[in-house]
Length: 131
Image 1 (cartoon, rainbow, N blue to C red):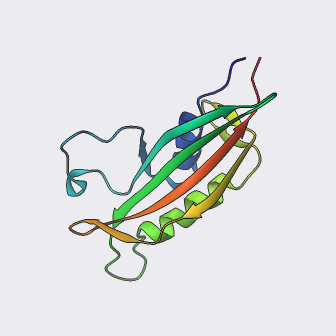
Image 2: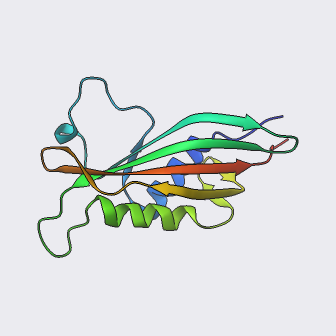
């Protein structure tokens, strides 16, 4: 059975909805204050094939500069936008679609480095084969 790449589908959907740059891998040795902001890091941690579907666990880390005034979007507000983008069924991106996405766990805002903050989302992606 063939499945779409859930990480790429989520990256496409997040970029389309928020305009934020997404990456699958963060450059080794780089510091958050050198990254383009905001930045959304999307990566899979495991997947499980069931009879007629695959469930993939994905981590979405949302990085942004700490808000310094009204109208400045920080990691918490951007994470809200990401969750909204992933709450539709199916989740559609330029590379394809997945049947369903849920966000069973969300970490609060924490400092990443300097003026950069991060919110972590644990995401479950359910998809059926494309063939």
